Length: 354
Image (cartoon, rainbow, N blue to C red; front, side, top):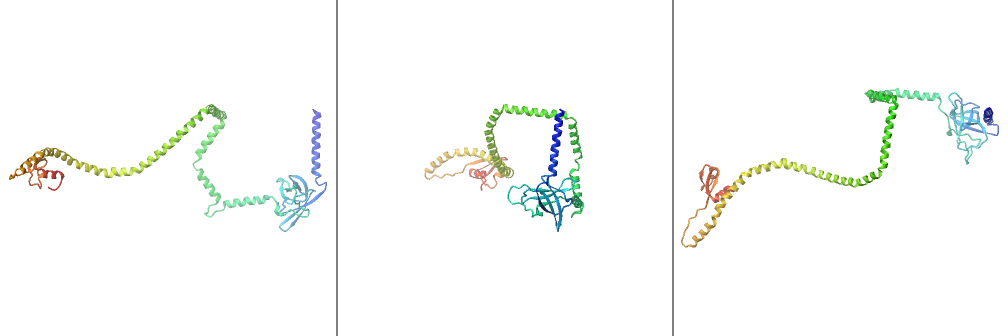
């Protein structure tokens, strides 16, 4: 066991030494010059590391300010760089210096970056400084606390709106937190209830799997019934629409016209009753007409005979004064009847001129 531990320690030491050698000897072979133009180079110094994917491949050899930019000259191990390679200043951590990271540095073929040409400022980036970030945060706070067009700072408006939205929710939140506390204080009960739900779900799934054939048949058979129900509902809808359209005329008929019709029917009852009574009395009179006509024919057939004729008379029940008004031949018989010639009686019943 001690031999294996010793061998492991030796191998680890050998790997560490190899890595250290690789890290130290990045520039031992042939090298090439690379330059890049940055807006600023705060925190970047000579001998700062140049890396590709975080692996050191060279170092910064010089920083040359030129107008609105800084030219950073670097020395890296000899390797081809594509023409679209980029350079980025990277913060390794808050407590260490910055380094230059070459991005898209693998050469897939095509145009190369010449050693006498720098990476343009359009293809370089620098991180924001802490002071810039703090100034941005300070500006944000200033904007939020500065009064707006309505005189109210945005932060105050946000807090006031949150207060309005959350107003009155204290009791509900307290109940929810209390229920959550009870749930977390009794995890066994919760897990038991969850297990019961899962067991019931399993039983339901088992039932559906076992009875799926019958369920499919039921659904298939129930489909036409639903279609018939749908058609029936369409018919009922149409009937209800038609009935709704007819309600207004029916309402107008029964509430506006029917009362006048009832009044007219009630007014016609005495006339119909009187006509019925007089029709029965007139039948006896009409039964005598054939005999009278036969007598007339016999009398007319005898030459030189003159006959005086008086028309038949009838007796009408009613007020004698009303019945005999305007009828000279009318004679009251009692307080409830009058006698008059048949033609006048017919006109009196019909309501015509006498």
